Length: 220
Image 1 (cartoon, rainbow, N blue to C red):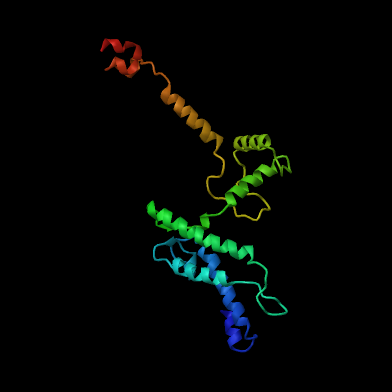
Image 2: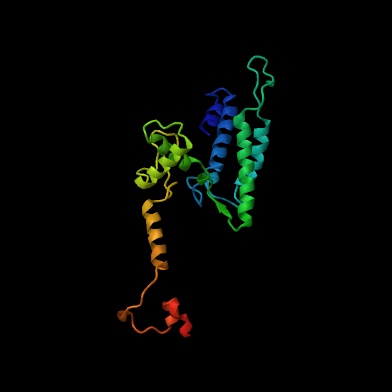
């Protein structure tokens, strides 16, 4: 908005208005796939949840047309370059179409509100970062090495869920690995529930012997 204002006042070159439009477009585009709130915050309408009637749907239809029209221009001839469309643009198109399909599928299963910021690979990047941190430089572990690292991290209970120095955000979920305490407590609970319970005098009279001792079922 500031660049467009300065261009209108003649302070900046008139062509800077095109730059302003491009910046605004990509700002909206990034917001549309990073919704983290169920309501509009700070006037960022595209950073809200994707749902029926939200502005994402109309914007994406327009964005697909704009992205498909983007090409390189030769700096000398000022004509369309023969180079293929950049992979970045191609992947943006795939991302938008992917989210459109995901929303349709989720809506069929009764999920009508999606926070698209949660669709990322940061948790698995943090997990792989933890794998690499074992042995200081475990950059290319074998299958056996990866399995051993997984077990070590499980026993260490993932002391940190964030890979320090990485280009991904901290994972505030339960983490890629289950706590070994939870694992062992589940095993203990299952064992306790299935173990044979011998009736005691303190438990009171046995109303149905067949429920307590399978060996006495013939007395029924």
